[in-house]
Length: 393
Image (cartoon, rainbow, N blue to C red; front, side, top):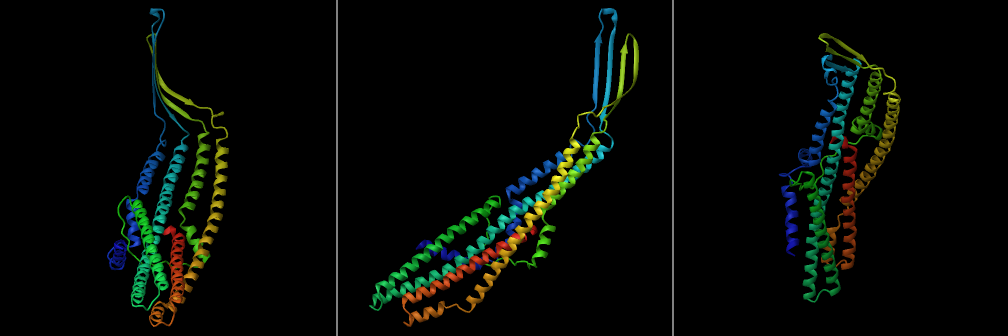
């Protein structure tokens, strides 16, 4: 019983602290700062940026020195000294820089997609927690009613006015509600632990019983266009296509002859020879089929964009239909329950003896079941809206 009293005190505190504590947006902002996966991914992105900035300059210069004593001893000594620098075809460096720039630009979209996935999970847990908070408030009210009814039947039985059967029904209802209250608190704590985990191990406080204001959801075609215009995954795929297109041009350039230039000094038999060194590679087979391979990748990128668009369109459509269905259910239940809250009337009728205990518990269960479905449907409605507006996270 002490546990139930503690639960009721905690539930009573939900409404009183709601305005003073975190909102969903504040929780998400905190998770965006503290989440270990996001922090690790950001660090990985920085490492990737440095990786993409390597290999843009010419290869390292090469220094060679040969010391060749002659044989027999009076044949003299030959000394050769070379300093050479190799170069790709000159236009290759500009194309390498373009490929690098596009790869770095793609990292931002990848970071956006990663962050949105983490925050989407976090917001789903926030919605679940608000649902659990609402259910806790409702179950605490039911527990108080059931306790009152149970005490009433105990008093009646003691006064010889009630029956053991009525008291048993009241006891069973009280036990069922107490169990629901305890199970809900257990689930609520699980969600809080998960949010704390997502927040890098820092405690999250979210006592809200009202969902954050939902954005206006337009007609499907407009909603679909809005999602696609802001979809980081689609931006990643499109950026990959641009990268491949630049890589095609770079690969073509790398099939051109490479250049080698430098200084050559030779000393032999007391004679000195100094002058320029120049070399040119002959592109015969090293880059065979590389351009064809890059063109095949370019065609594959086009197909990827089409495949993602088709898949995403039907995913958006499914989410939009879920939104419409749950919105309709929520509206209908809210309208019905606003005009059919018979709990107080049932209690008065029971007290006056106008209805039997079994009629009271049966009618009460109808209302409780309807209200539970409203809470569940409202939760699913909020999740569907969150999925549709994932790009805003």
